[in-house]
Structure formats: C-alpha cells, structure tokens
Image 1 (cartoon, rainbow, N blue to C red):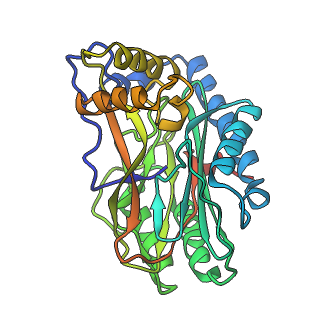
Image 2 (image 1 turned 135 degrees about the horizontal axis):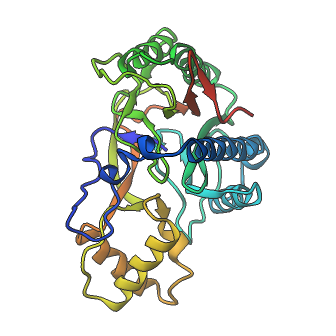
Length: 334
C-alpha cells in the first residue's frame, strides 16, 4: 500500500498513552536478541509467502462482472486461510485511481470489461508484513503500461543492496518507465517496513531523487513503481475508506471509546477499512458518528483514495524485499 508524499504523514503525540509511532520502534532492532531477530525475519518470510499465494489467484478473481466487494472480501479471507492476517484492506484501484480504494460495506460496483485493475494486498504475521501488488489489464490493450511498472520493479530490485541510496533506486524506476513513454507517479513512494509499521519513515521514490538514505542489511522495503499514462502525479479524492490509528486521545462518546479500544486491540497501528467495523455497530449512524469523532480528535490517520490528476490510466507492481549482504531478496515471490 503506497505512501503518498503529499499527505502529511502520521502526527504522533507522545503525550498520549498508547500513541504508536516511529519513536517506539527506532531502537528495537538493536535491542533484539539473535533469536528474536531470526524469528522476526522468519515472520517476514512467512507473511511474504502468504501474500504471494493469494496474489497468484488474482487473475481468477478479477473478471468482468465480478463485484469489488466480493473480490476484496475473498482476498482478505484468503490471507487468513494462508495463515496470516490482512495487514491492510485489499486495495482495488481501477483505471485512473492509483491507490487506496477499498470498497465500502454496501458497494455494488462491478468490474468493467476494459478496466485496468490494480490489486494491492498485505499479509502480516505478528506485525511482520508482506506487501504485494499486481495489475490486471482486462482490456488487453495496456500491455506496455503494465510492462513499464513491471520492468521498473525488476530494475529497482536488481540495484538494491547495502550502501545504495533510495534516490538511486528511484532513478532506476524512472528510467524504465520513461523509456516506455510513460510517467512514474512522482508523489507516491515505496516504503520501509518494520513490525506493525507499514510506513516506517523511509520512502523509495519512483523518480530520481536526492533522497540519501542508504539501504542497510536487514532492512525490509516494499518497492512499488506506478506507471502513469496521465500526469504522473496523484491527488486526494474526497473518498476515504481506509484509516490507521495514530494516537489515543481522550474521547467524549461512549461508542467512540469502544471503537478506539476495538481498533487498538485488533489492528494496532495497521490500516483498516470502515467496512471491517460495520459489524460492530447495529447502526450505521452510530459508526459514522464515532468514526468522525476519532478523525476530528486526531486519533486516526486517513488514507484518501488517490487519483492521477491527468485522469490517465495507472499500472502498479509491488514486491516486499529484504536487503541482504550483497543483494535484495524478494520475500513475496510467487
């Protein structure tokens, strides 16, 4: 699930008792015993395999006439059946929508015959995440666009090893996409992953950049090039279906407090969908009122649906990789 550089990342208030942020995780790696580190890497590998096993089935699910809601719920159930939990809601972003669309609980949209459909899923085991995406071109006419993001991903992974800057990885991505006549989406990035932190403070740009962070052995990154036939920039739409907990302020409403507790216990700091909560409350109004209080209090970080500003078609391809001694190992290989 992409990081949008234009959204002002999570604002963590350290005064809140349970605020979940990078400050809690920054020294964890150093304090781990060799056994804990081995267990964490094993969990990342298992989560990557789980995500890959689900993505393999995508072409059978994403077909004209199929309901977006059915596809999303099937993918999320398959993640559970593969022995993991959804790390975030299944994203089904169609045509000029680049990222962060997941259907609402009452969504009745079906896949069109000529849609370009991006499926982005996450599986986690104890917070260790496999994040993976593919594009399904139902029109059969966007092979070049799909090839652009695929070739960019291969080039990015090929150059990833300790000491390489993330800006250099972005350069490899940009070169592959522009050489095919498309634009990389410049304000979406891949992202470093840490346990229970989908976006752990370092981005992998999709364009050549002066970003100087150098890859280190043991880093886990989601690399996700987006190729656009439009402007190569995304903007927020007014629709938001995905949220993540970022602070735990004092709340007035009884139901808001219950909702906050549920989110904390079930998703911790990982993104979740509003539709996941719809079974908690009998009343849709109660849920939306409680959610609104959580948003206005700063408890939740919203992930608006992102659209290419030129309304051009967008393709995406993503893998999660582990930086090893002299290369990057793909954890989500099918």
